[in-house]
Length: 133
Image 1 (spheres, helix red, strand yellow):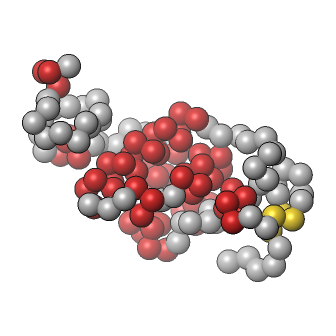
Image 2 (cartoon, rainbow, N blue to C red; image 1 turned 90 degrees about the vertical axis):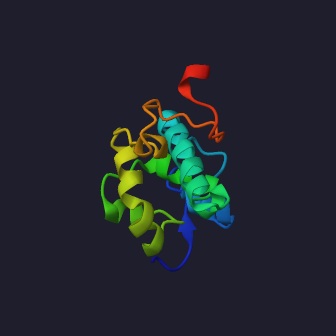
């Protein structure tokens, strides 16, 4: 990992705030956020957290998801360069994140259970099914 001061990739100012360093830009500088990707990543993270029985931030923090949605990495090394994506998370979640960045849909946990809900939406209520919509 890089040592020394971190500079904003937009304006070049030295960054001191941890959130700004994670995003590699000042909070006030323009973002190239892929909003649709960010929403897909948030939905995926919620599903992962539910499966793991952990809070969503244990999968990835909001800032890490923002950084991913801004960078839209296409390879493992590109994803690994994002702050908050260490070896363990890369090994555990990297393939899914890269697939989402590439625009591919992932099967939801419900699809694996054979309930036929290919829409991927999950209310969290196991008694609710797609016929109640």
